[in-house]
Length: 83
Image (cartoon, rainbow, N blue to C red):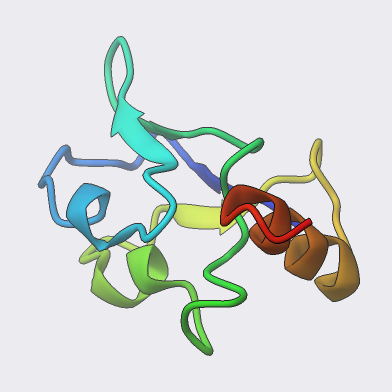
């Protein structure tokens, strides 16, 4: 499942540089996560790094973009050009 930044985001800027897929960017009001790039850090880390550093726990699973661990792994391989 891709991740989502909810409206509790305080724009602290700590999540964006932690994303190995460059899936996080500034939106109109708060940071946003591109579901096409988010792999929940599968292939890079054991846990989503944005969630690890978020001081307000505003990063949650995106119910509109449910993906299995296998699908996240396949997305990771596509993103790095091995699939």
